[in-house]
Amino acid sequence: MNLSYWELDTYFKNLDFVVIGSGIVGLSTAFHLRQKHPKAKILILEKGKLPEGASTKNAGFACFGGISEILSYQKTQSQQEIYNLVERRYKGLQKLRNLLGDESMDFHPLGGYELFRESDRELMHVCLDEMDHINQWLQPIFKQDVFKSSEKDFGFEGIIGNIETELEGQIHTGKMMRSFVKMVVSHDISILNSVEVMHLEELNTSVELELNHEFTIKCSKVFLCTNAFTKKLYDLDVVPARAQVLITKPIENLKVIGNFHMNEGFYYFRNTGNRILFGGGRNLDIEGETTSEFGITNTIQNQLETYLREIILPSQEFEIEHRWSGIMAMGADRTPIVKQLSDNVYCGVKLTGTGIAIGSLVGEELADLTE
Image (cartoon, rainbow, N blue to C red; front, side, top):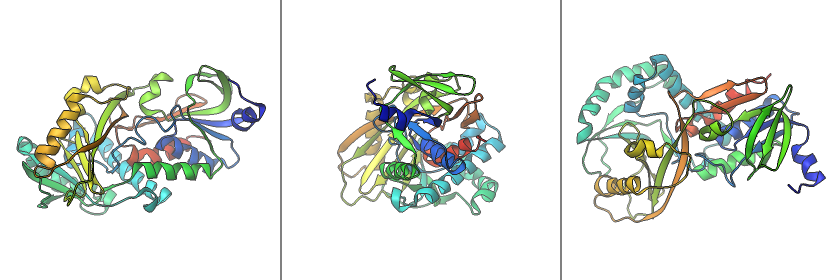
C-alpha cells in the first residue's frame, strides 16, 4: 500500500487502542476509552464506506421489547437474565439520549403498540393475563406501569386488540450516527473507512493486525465491535441474521403515528414523517436469512407488501420508494457478549437486533474492562 511517512506516523504508529467497527458499539467504546485514558492514541477501523451491519441500516426503533417478546424469552433464559436484559435496554436508551441529545438524532417519544390478529388471539390473552404481573415485575426499572391495553384506532384491518407502552420512541438512524461520529472525532479519535482487518495475531504485549491484505500494524489492545461479522476474526457464539426493510413514498393524511410490532417482534413498522417504514419477516425463511450477505428476497418483500396492503393501509394507496437490508447478530440467548478474550483482545458483540437500545451501554461496559 502506497502510504507516506506522514500517513503512517499520523494514523498507524504508537497505537494504544484499535477499535474494529464504527457502528454504535465501536463509537461508544472509543468515546468511553477516551474518558478513561485521556492521552491514549485511539483508532477506529471500518471496512465499509459507512458502518456495515445494522447501525446505519436499522429501522430506528428506540424500544426495549414488547410484552409477547419478553414472555417468549422465558423459553431460553431465566427470569433474572430477562430482567437484566430489559433493564440494560432501557438504561442504554437513556444513555444514548444523554450522550447525543434528542434533537440531534430526531428522537420522538411516540409510544409503542403490539398488535394482535385473529390468529394471535390466544397469545393476546396470555399477554393480557400476564400484563399486571409483568408491570409489577418491571416496576423497579421503569418506576411506572409499562404496558396497558389500548383502544386506539389507527385504521388497521383485522386487528382484534393491541397493548400499548408510552415509553418507546423512534429516531432518525442516519442523524444519530452522524452525531455520534462528530462527537467521537471531536475527542481526538481517528476513524478510517474502507479499511478491513483480515487477520489478527496476538503477540506477547501487543496485537498485530493485517489490513486489506496489504500491510500490518501493531497496537497495545484491540476491541472487536464487529457484531455479526465477528467470526471472521474470532470464534464466538455469534450467528448473522439478515433483516429486510422497505419504506413507502409520502402518504397523504397518514394516521399511522407511532411504533408497532406484530408476531412477537418478527414484524415491525413505524411512521417516518408521512411515510411507513416496515421491516421483518425473517421468520419466513430463518435458514435463508441466517447470512452475512446483504440483499432482499421476493418471499419476504412480497409478504411485507401484503401486510401493508391488507392490514396497515387497507384503504390507502401507497408506493414503495426504497428497500434495503441490515445484518444483525444472534446467538443461543439474547445476552450480549461483553468480555476480555485474552490479555489484549476484547469484544462487545451479539446485540440481537437491539443495537440502538444497548449499543452505547455495551461500549461503556467494554471500555470499563480496561485498567
